[in-house]
Each structure stands twice: as structure tokens, then as C-alpha cells.
Length: 155
Image 1: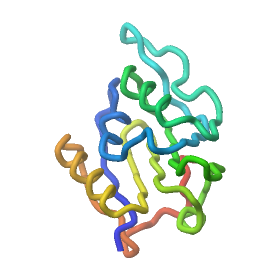
Image 2 (image 1 turned 180 degrees about the horizontal axis):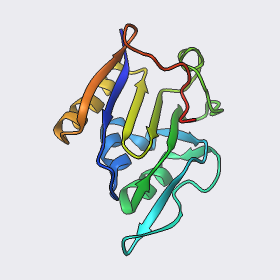
Image 3 (image 1 turned 45 degrees about the horizontal axis):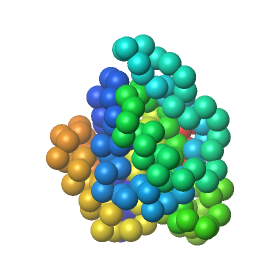
């Protein structure tokens, strides 16, 4: 069974989260983030943190505007999507993910390694196709047989 996808993005400034999440309909969800390390970029210089602190329940419209309208540098990211009106406490394991309201987990590690877990198989296919279209490196499905992750965390 397909659990998610993994791939590598360029180690540079950009709007990669926006590009990656286009097929996921960001505005339909509320989002949680552990406040990991990533920065807004202005005039090719790192500025304030993209996610300054742990966030539970960020409206999808606010996240869409943040990701679409800014340039940023990703180092570590942990984003989780929850249906509106549902509990948005951060989950840490695949088992918690399966048994929770969380619909998507997006992790970025060391600026380039992206892992996405998604419950909706049609949306997972859309995420795979956009990563393929963007020519992100080492794109592959994460399955029950090849998933080596023990925690859904960047730490």
C-alpha cells in the first residue's frame, strides 16, 4: 500500500512548499507546524522565521498566502493538515497518523529531503505528478515495504 512519496528539492531560495502543495487544496484544511527552522527571504537575505513558533490550527487561506506570496529558505519543516473543525495536535508516528484526523504530513530535512504522507490516494497521486512535473530528484513512493521512518518528525 502507498503511504506517501519522497523526493529531493534544490537547496536554494524559492517557493517550494507552494509548488509541492498545489494539488492538495491548502485552503480546505487547518494546519499545524512544530515551528521548525525555515526563513523568509528578502533581497536574497534570510529574514524572520517562516514559522516563528509552534502553530496549531493555522487557517489554510493564511498558509496559502504565506507560501504563495513569499520566497523562503527551508531547512527543517513539519507541516500537518487537518480537516476544519477537527483536532490539530501534532502527531509523531505513522500509527498516530493513521489513527488521527491528520490528512497529510509534509517533512523537509536538511533543506532538500522531502517526505509526504497522505491518506487520500487521489491527492497522493496528484502530489506525485507535480513532483514529477517539477523534475524533483529521486522521486519515489513510500510503501508499507520500503518505509524506514520510525517517527514523522524532522528531529
